[in-house]
Length: 268
Length: 265
Image (cartoon, rainbow over the protein chains, first blue to last red):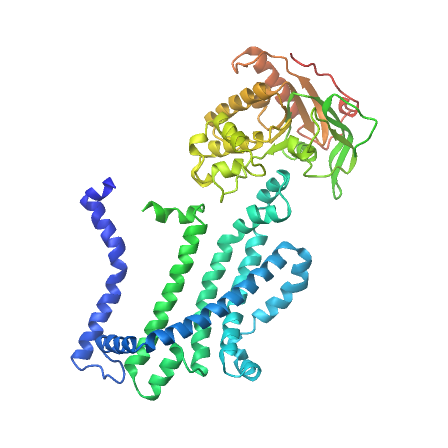
């Protein structure tokens, strides 16, 4: 691009990409300095370098990947079940008045129960194995997706639907060409919320009882007072959360190219 | 609704058509016959029922009473012979310009031709949000024309455009109409637009056709010509007279069958 030849533009691009990183890097430096100077006890907060070292050790032994994969698998399976169910329920209530009358108030009622409050019941039902965790994750993700799918379909511009009908679209074609794409921005908002709930639920579920996974790693490290590993697991959750966010953004950029709100980024 | 006794050369045939929304009488005993190929403008104050009349013909609303028939030269899918254009372009924002025109049809070449006619073939891959208001309406026009309709219904399609774009669009619509010879029902609140384009002007007042006026001026019509100005004045005055709709009016000519138009050949 010819704009980059202008120094002003280069500086702008640099600051746009670099500035968000400035504060975290600064904090990290202060933290490391405080640990090195002995102001912080390693029991309270180990130095960043110690955390990295702990991570390196776990990586080499293969432990890190094993736990990461176990957590990812739970999250993914739970999310797919929850999101799929939420989508289907949202389509039913969004597309049919009867469906909405039949299901919506019930779903709203269940939605208002904090799903983590069900943990004792879930343990009674499924014990403490995988099913319980996947169930909890699915329960945590189903409602954000459901709500936003329902809301999205109901809010598709009535003028567009009328236009499409007068152009002979009906049934599945109407759904595919008009209702689904019209609801997609809202559905993707639901996906973002759901991904947040997914990690939250997983952390809680894994902390209760597990024999592998990041939560297990954290609880195990706590017993042995390995603060560096505990910190590492927190960091892993942060990274996984960020990865999920990037995935959601990628979907948005891919599917919402037409949306004026998502076109600015491609212009940069 | 397909009463067997009407075999007609008219494209649109309304016999004693009424429409109520709840208690409110929106259209009252409308009689109207529109021959094939005629350009009819429907004007009137907002809320007079002109849009409802159009929506009835489009099949977007059901008449409460009366007979409404559409007749086509070629048989086939009736609904695809009628195309409607709205004030807002109603392009699907998630489809490219070309895909919008292709909506409900697979005729790629037809779509290409239609987009070329409105001069937007080179913008075919754009999202509608990147187009100006006038361009959007041109795409909407192409989308309507790609089906080769015999009847084009225009619901204030130029209402939201700026004055210059409006004139351009009027010329485009007139040109395409002269080429394709479809029938047009144009609802507008712009009397000068009606006078510039139409063969026939209907003034709708309070749910009735208050005036049915043939316009036999040669085309292209110059806005500065006295005949155009006089006609515009006549129609405008007619609409303005109707300022107090609650004053009982004398029985109107609208309740009698009223073909007082002549077809300019």
